[in-house]
Image 1: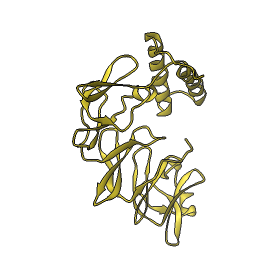
Image 2: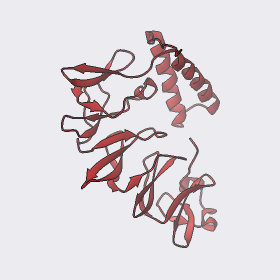
Image 3: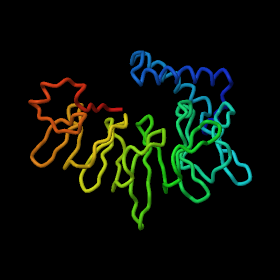
Image 4: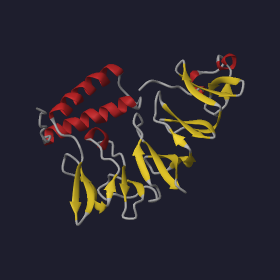
Length: 242
């Protein structure tokens, strides 16, 4: 039989906030160590096994909103639907929610208690990109065909919504396609689809155009192995497994 999870007490919510606040500082490389992060994450996972941490959908007169586990209204009941809701480990970061209006169009809205739109209601779907901190894949249907782009958590379109496809994130980046290949990194860096190939190798992003193959630098230029040896690692585009 599946165990029924309890709603967290105020003390548990406070501890979750402390853990997640600390974890986000470590993950953002602001402070702390991997060892500390592992201990904190293990504690969080233990709490998550005991308590229900998912958002609660609320309804009023046929309109939907969201409430978090502490009883705070993060989005008032003013929307038709949400493409996804989050558990508290994400909601604690104040991450926006993809909301659908009554014209069946999506926008990102802030979890600010008002549901403030951060971009126009112009997309046919928006989904959070797993393994990122703040990226969302947006989709428009044009003449029966889906085209894709990427929004950040401020509602800014960092990859134009005109791609044939934006892949899931792996090793710190997502490949994207529009005739040729490009990439978007989890920090929002965008490399236009001008390459024949883009891939991770030896912990860095590599690219190819014809016979020219090498590291990709932060300007989007392909750098040979020999030239890369003269550069610092901070000049190259790093990839890590997450």
